[in-house]
Length: 420
Ligand SMILES: Nc1nc2c(ncn2[C@@H]2O[C@H](COP(=O)(O)OP(=O)(O)OP(=O)(O)O)[C@@H](O)[C@H]2O)c(=O)[nH]1
Ligand SMILES: [Mg+2]
Image 1: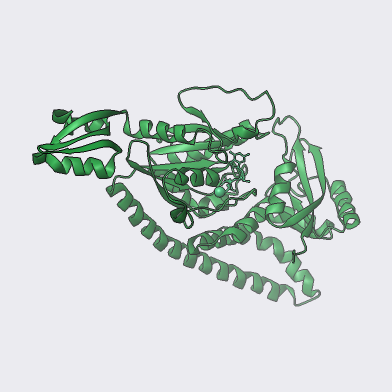
Image 2: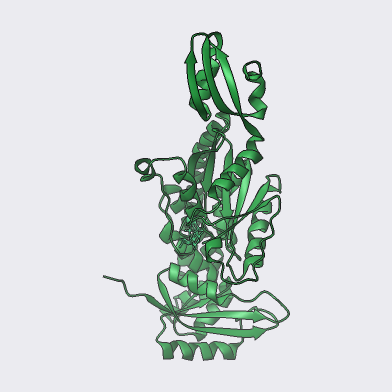
């Protein structure tokens, strides 16, 4: 049975002079990801955000009436509201009021599966709540009404506050432990010298779909069953980072990582709480920046992602731009601009997925070529290595050794030089 969806009215500001369009379409998708339903949308054009009421007081009264008319339970604002804005708006609007940050945190809370994910979300939620507790003071003292209620109200806030602070410390300690485990795993990967390629991009760009397409190139159906990652036409389908080992066309391996997507105005509490997850990017050998080529706000979303990448990595990791969903291109405005660091793929149709792997192989391992070799019996371990770890062909066993064709990277050719 389908659950009743929470009925919502969404509200945003279009700042004059800003060419950044207030994207209510995206907010609608966020509401849907939180299993809500958007019944109406209000946008006010303004010069600036009002410190006390976010938008005009009169407008808020209008919104309150509109919400009643629509029978909306919740009114959602497309920016983060301060404690006092929230309080002032709640005084006027007779419905539940939440802001963009609370909404995103709610989606994250629904999506978190691992212990670490859950802790990170709870941490972000508590840090969001803490500075807003005092905004609730008025509310608490008023609720009880009359003399004597002010004291307990304040006391309540103080106990709440202390409770939250100690829970934050507790979570931070737990996350630190989990990070140590992650650190150990990462060090192991580095020691094994398997390069890491991180897939990053705006939420819903197709990162998880791409990871699935990549593993399909080198695992059997049976193996794939428990290797596939979760894909959904929904913002923030992925929250927990996944790593998968994939064989490149030359025979070497890389580990691809798929992680939480980016969004503009990503709440700072989230960036901070997910710091550990996001900082994994710093240890990537290569970053694939995946972009939905049909995205109406392509430039803005691209910039949002690039800004986050550079914030996290200090621009020290090479970035390859990969446009996805080329199967869906429906307007001719999109121009293919082939250049050295740009690729075009379709993750669902698996168009150019192999060339992407080829590109990555080249970027990480350099050139490789196919050689005919004759390896003498005295050096057969070289043959066994190639046989196990590279792509070989036409293997013929002869009395004094083995003849074969093998793909060899140029950086290792010296080992086989004598037998080519
Ligand atoms: N037409 C088309 N759709 C695609 C392609 N790649 C992904 N999609 C669809 O885009 C939607 C989002 O895909 P995901 O792989 O979940 O996207 P993501 O980037 O992992 O999203 P988050 O985890 O939410 O950040 C799904 O409905 C996919 O089927 C593609 O090449 N072509
Ligand atoms: Mg995903």
